Length: 211
Image (cartoon, rainbow, N blue to C red; front, side):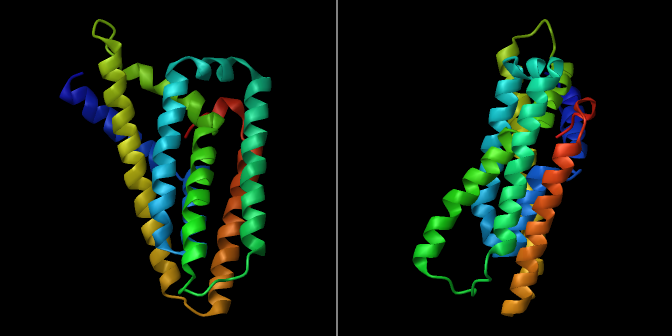
């Protein structure tokens, strides 16, 4: 892969990632509801989710989703339902003090990591996008595996930076509001964003595939 082709790919990925989707809405929601420290859990989840989605897509599963409206619809509704479930759960959650117990802190990161991973990896739009987008930057007469490695590493790296910036921005906003009432409002705002993301995911059409 030439440097010029890689730069073009990186710029294209950056543009795509700049458009918030369900994954970024999840990251922002957690940061608004629980603080910017959630980035330590959600960003790795996003990275692993994108890695999984790209790998599965390049192995051919994306082609199945592109061709089958039923398969796409099932995965889409499952993802939408999961987002709405998380949103309702966050909406109903009582605000916590900034000085939380060690036990509470220890239990939360794994759940946030898992939620970020599931939402990212099972996003059907992302899988279809990868199968349609990534191969355009593969040079046919060169070994495929090294090229896929570079393409996947580039996208996952940029996705991590993007998610981290969103989490830090949302978390910084939350830190300015420390009263229980303000924390409750921020938590419900995050939950509302997740519910909206779920509804948007459920209504999206298969032809509008994007990450």
